[in-house]
Length: 328
Ligand code: UFG
View 1 (tube, helix red, strand yellow):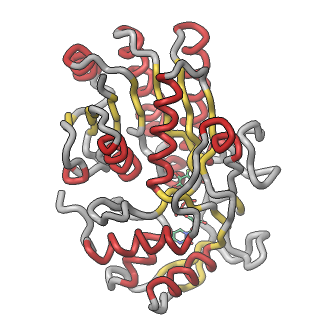
View 2 (cartoon, protein in one colour):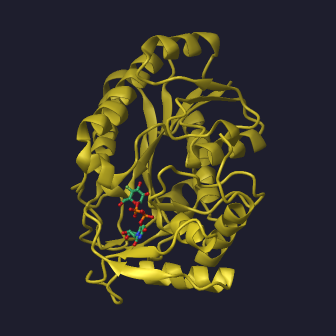
C-alpha cells in the first residue's frame, strides 16, 4: 500500500522519497511547490496542491488506499516565524489538523511527523534527550510542538499512531549527486558557504562571536539528510509493525561551531572561505546537540555519514554540479 509524503519535493522530503523508492515502496508525493522543486521528484507521482485544500486531500485519499503518511510539508525558518507567526501557525498547525482529519475520515492511522530541535529552546542539558523541557524560542518551534501535542491527543482519542522525529541540523546531499539542498532564499550555513565558494556570494557572515562557547560562535549538530531519510523508513516500518507512538531526536551527538564548520569546508574543498564577523541572528540558541540514543536503541538507527567531512563532501559534490540549484 502506498505511503503519502507531504512536502516530498522539499529537501528532506525528496531524499526520503528516494529512499522509500529504493525500498520498493509505492510513494505518492504532495507538494504545493512553494519551497519544493518539481525536478526533485523523479519517479513517484507528484500532486501539486496545498494541505489547506481539504477537497484536494480528500480526493487523494479516495484515489489511493494510503497506508501511512510522512508529513514534511511546513514552513521551517526560525527568523521568518518570528516576523510572521500567523503564517507558521496556519501552515504548520492548521494544515496538520486538516491532514489529520482527512486521515481519520479515511481510517489511516499512521503518521511520521517532521519535528525539530527548535521545540527545546535554550538547552539545560547537552546532549539534549527527548524528555528535556520544551520551551521553544520561536513560533516555528512552537508550531511543531503544538502538532506533537495534537498528535498525542489524536492518539488517545482516535488511535492515530505517530512517530515524531526531531531533526537537528540537516545537511549534505544524496551521494549519487542528483538531488540536494536548494532553498530560496538560502539561510542555512553549509549551502551559503558553498555558494560563496562558487562565486554566488561575496562572503559568509558569521552570526555572533560572543556566544558562551569555546570560540564564541554557535554550536550545532549536523546530520546527513540520507541518515534522516533512513530514520523515516525505520519509523514507518515500526508503525506498520504496530508500534506505539514515539518521539525521537535525530543528530550525531557531536557539535561543531560555525567557525569549525567553515574550517571543515576549507579542508574538504581546499578553498579559503571569505568570512566576516557579524551580529547575532535573533532566535539562535548557543548550542544544540542531540542525544539520539533512543532511536539507536529502539529502532536500530545507525548513521551512515556521521562525519562532518563526509556530510560536507556530499553537499559540495551537489553544489558543484548544480551551482544554480534545481531547474524548477
Ligand atoms: N549561520 C551563520 N551565517 C549564515 C547562516 C548561518 O553564522 O550565513 C549560523 C547560524 O547563526 C547558526 C548556524 O550557523 O548558528 C546554523 O544555522 P542554520 O541556519 O544552518 O541552521 P539553524 O541551526 O538555524 O536551523 C536548524 C534547522 C531549523 C531548526 C533549527 C533549530 O534548519 O529547522 O535548526 O534551532 F529549527
